Image (cartoon, rainbow, N blue to C red; front, side):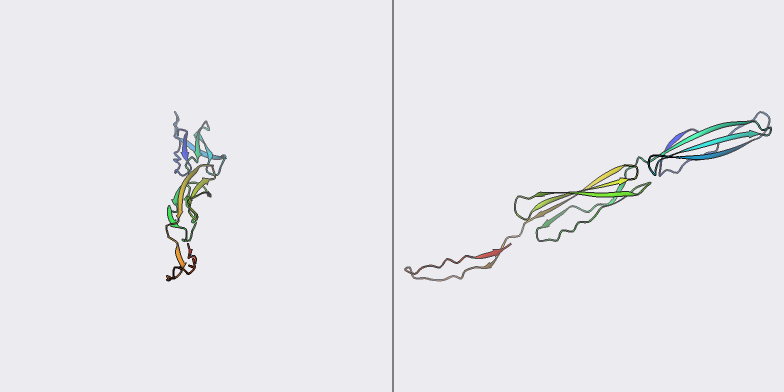
Length: 177
């Protein structure tokens, strides 16, 4: 069989070699050796075929199958973008990713940009999924926290009537946000 390259998740086609002899039948055997690659999903499979005729004459041929991991992990779940008010609870969920051949390492980087008014901000979360062979993919979640609620008065001075010669008390109102 011809040499070929395959992705680590592919099923390998392990065809047998064929041989003929001018005087009779031929027995063909195969020995497989695996040479480890740079990462768990990569290796080289060397198949050595030996053809022997009834008189002990032999011929040797080989096939090399290069197995590699070039596929980046895929995200199966990424937290949805959110718009919250500053009084809402901020729940930070993690993304989930899988790979076709190896384990996945998942990291998150968070960048917070302050908003134009107190209590508001934009949080950008970038998830990076990396497999054991260094292939990676990214996904992003944006959380916008804003203040959309008006302050509430907690106390307002009562209305009153005074004589023009009386001093007018000017009590302050209080409010909370």
